[in-house]
Length: 306
Length: 302
Image 1: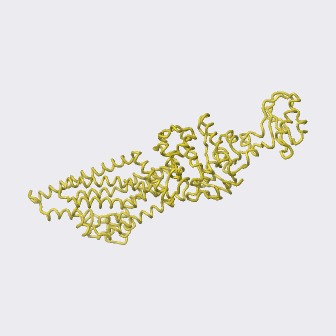
Image 2: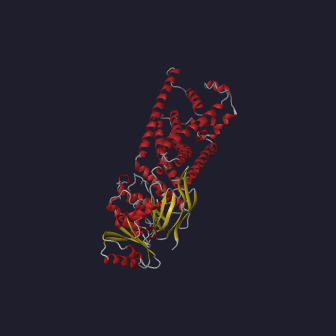
Image 3: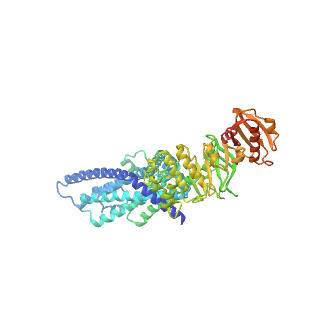
C-alpha cells in the first residue's frame, strides 16, 4: 500500500512538473510539425496518384476496382502482405495509414526525446538524493514511467485525433463510424507500442548520470532494434522477391531471418491487425519487452551509487 | 545512551581509488556529531553511505538499527541536507517542499513545509522557483526539507558553507535547537563551528579514521588548559608542584600550557589555583582556555 502511495505521489508530482515546465508544449509542437509535414507529403502523393489514375481512365471517374488495385499494391509493398490486414485497412484512407505508419516509425525517437533525462537528469545534479531518502528507488522509476506514459498518451491522442480529422476532411467518404473506430484503434496501438520504448528510455536514463549520454545510448539502441528487424526481414525474403526489391545480395530465406523475432519492432504491425489473437500476441510481446527493459532499469538503479 | 548510528570497518572504493578505508565509529542518540577532515578525507563519502546514497564496498552501517542500503528504510527516520544536491529548478519552493512531505507520507505536508520554511527564516520564498534562489537561500531551503517531519536522525553536509556570517549564525542556531531532541551528524570545514556545536566527532584523513571521541577528549578539555601570558616571569616549577599538575610549559607566542590529572583534580579547582599563583607572582595574562583549539588538534592529527 505504501508503495502505491509513493508511486502515485511521484506520478502526480512529475506530471505536474512536466506540464508546468513547458517541455510538453515544445514536444507537442515538434510532434505536430512532424505530423503536419507527413500529412502534407501524404496529401501531395495522394493527389499525384489520383491524377495518374484519372489520366489512366481518360478523365472518367475511376471505378472501385480501378482505385483498389493500385491501393492494394501500395499496401502490399509498404505495409503488409497479410490478406486479413489488407481487408481491414481498406476502410482507412491511404494517406492516414501512410502518415500514421511514418509517425510510428519515429515514435521511439520521440519517446527518447521526451524522457531521456527522467532519471539521468536527477542523478547528475544529485536532486535524486532528496527522493531516495523518502521513497524506494523502485517507486521512483515506476512513478516517473507512469508520468511519461500519461504525457505520451496525452500528446499521442492529440496528434492522432488531428491526423484523423485531416484525413476525414480530405476524404469525405471516410465514414463517421470508421473515423471513431480508427481513432480509438490508432491511439490504442500507439499506446501499446510505446510501452516497450518508454521502458527502454527509462532503462538508459537509469544507467547513466548525464542526460546527453542517455539520449545517445537510447538512439543507438533504437538503431540496433531497427537494424535487427530490417536485416531479419531481408534474410527471410525468398531470392526472387529479393531481386525484385533490389536486394540482390540476399540469396534466399535463411536461419538469419529468425533474428527479427528478437526485435520488438517486428511485432509493431500486428497491433493494427483485425484478428484479436494477432493483436493480443503483439500487445503481449510489447508488454513483455517493456517488462524486461523495466526490470533492467530497476536493477540498474537499485545497484548503483547515486 | 545507545548508539543511533553504528559504523564498522566501512570502506568505499571508486575503481582503484580508496575513498574510505576501514572506518569504525558510533554516534550516540541525541548527540550532535561532527565529521571533520581536509578535502578528500572521505567525509562526504562516509556521509553519503550513511544516507544510503552510496553502497559500501565493505563493512556495515546501521542507522537506528537499520541498513540504509535497504530500500525505503530511512523514510521518516532520516532528514538529509546533501552537499551540492540541486533542488529541481522549475518547482516553486512551497510546492516542492509539500511534494517532499507527501513522498515522506507526512499527514500535513503543506503545513509541515510552511513550518520548516519559517524555521530557516525563509517563508517569503514559498512561491519562488527553486532555480531562482540565491546560494544561501538554496542551502536553507534544502535544510528546511531535511527538518520536515522532525525525523529522529538529521544529516547535514556542510550546512553553512558559502553562507554570510549572519545567515550562518542563524543556521547554527537551528542546529543548536536540534541538539538533544535529534541525533545530528554535521560535516563541515568550519572547525570553530563544530567545536561549538558538537558533542563528539570523527576526524578522517585520506579515507582513514584518525580519531573518534567526545569533543572534550579530542580537545583535551579534561586534561589541560592554556593561559595567554601578557607580561611577567612564569613560575613553572611552582606550577608543577601544584596537586594534580602533571606538567607545565611555555609554548610559542607566550602561551602557558598546564596538563593535569583529571581523576585527582577537577578542572575548575586546578585552573583557579594556577591562575591565583600567577597573580601572586605578578604575572599578567589575557585569556584562559581549556584544552586545545579544535583547529590545532585537527592540524596535529591530519
